[in-house]
Image (cartoon, rainbow, N blue to C red):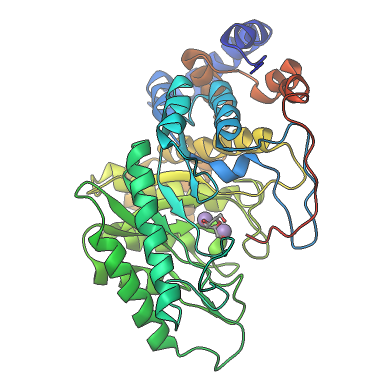
Amino acid sequence: MINPVTDEFIGQRNQRHEADLRSDYNALGEKLARDGIDIEALTRKAQEFRIAVPSWGVGTGGTRFARFPGLAEPRHIFDKLDDCAVINRLCRVTDEVSPHFPWDVVDDMSEVREHAAAHGLSFASVNSNTFQDRDGQSASFKFGSLSHTDKSARDIAVDHNIKCIEWGQQLGSRVLTVWVGDGSNLPGQQHFTRALERYLGSMREIYAALPDDWRVFIEHKMFEPAFYSTVIQDWGTNVLCALELGDKAYSLVDLGHHAPNVNIEMIVARLIQFGKLAGFHFNDSKYGDDDLDSGSLHPYQQFLIFNELVDAEHRDAYKVRPDYMLDQSHNVTDPIESLVTSAVAVQRSYLQALLVDRGALEGYQENNDALMASETLKRAFNTDVTPIQKAARLNSGGAIDPIECYRAAGYREALATERPAVKGGGSGIV
Ligand code: PSV
Ligand code: MN
Ligand code: MN
């Protein structure tokens, strides 16, 4: 495989930006020092930050209407890992990949693990797919999977999740994420209680198959592909199921899986308080599960979520630290560029949240000074931490300007012959 995005190439491109970065970094360092903040300590935090990328995110996404594949689309998990390696090489915060099964299954999974390791990548949570039928499947998921009325369909779904754990073990993962598309399209179609009982029955079987050091993450979603009701519709049902299953079950928050205007940062605070926050699928949205690039529409909401996360770190409130992952669909951009930009956008929210003066905020909260409490958050949010992020990438061997570097390298063009054009069409509603 030809890969022009080499460490050497990145180093050469960085030379063009180093002088500007040094002066921006020094200016920000002086400004932060006046508030008693050490820019070097923040830069180390930026370098330690990690967020996983989804294997499915590196392929061009689609809508219900069409899919328009780009140049050099990845053909299989090995190509996907090559693309993930480029993302990590540029931004140096995405050294974990989250695979989706059966999309990413091959005969010998040890080859997948070795391929990833050769790129310095390892595996985050594994995701099960019971929202699509396989060829020749004996009972369909059309009316649900883990909650289906037909036991034989439920058994196929349970069995698939158990296989996902086994594939995950071969990859060195220790988390299974379960999202089901189960639900109903018309009032009366489904008995709410019985459907959830069936779901819990299936999940108990999966839970029993978890190895000792594994956890299971439950993902809720308000609608789509079911449009009237979903079995795990919100964080309430999610956390009730996690409590019902036991200590290895946690609730995962995908930002796009809520009604518009829901106070997601407050959900995060509640899940932390009761020790049930699994982690996140980051993305952004305007209307529903739009899967837009993280921080592209609601950077303040993303910052407020990180404000809760950093507050929990500060209070030493975690039993287990939450996992961060991107879960996006890239329909009109190069997925590599979107994933790099999004990883940087999430890292930015984290750094801004680290800037919050927690002592002052607590004082304003205790004294009911609403205006100054809000200003304390905004002061942190309005600080441009870009020089810290650039310096962190430079220190870790990444690109100061990752998109400029990626475009200059001509990665897609170099791979165009090896990865022939694929046809568009079809529906890609998930
Ligand atoms: C569903 O909308 C979802 O967010 C779940 O995480 C799936 O696993 C993922 O998208 C990919 O289809
Ligand atoms: Mn998701
Ligand atoms: Mn989603």
